Length: 112
Image (cartoon, rainbow, N blue to C red; front, top):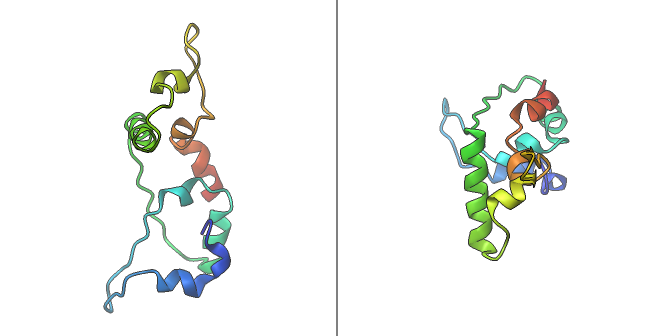
């Protein structure tokens, strides 16, 4: 429902595993939750769809995200220097992606 959306619903469904009658297939792409266009796309596909949102503690989620980043780019600044706009005042950079994704209430508004 994000970067491959243009490929269409049939392509998306073809990517799902086969299920027996009575089984439920679940999707767990975290990026969908924070992509602004996704709620309307999901609704267009199936207006009666039922969703289960599972979120992780936002602090441990941000740290995990950062560890993934440094595994690919080990020379980036420390977590603390990226997370804070100003260390003296403690002002947090909520636009830094690992923190922004954890603003669950903000993202949930798009789904309601």
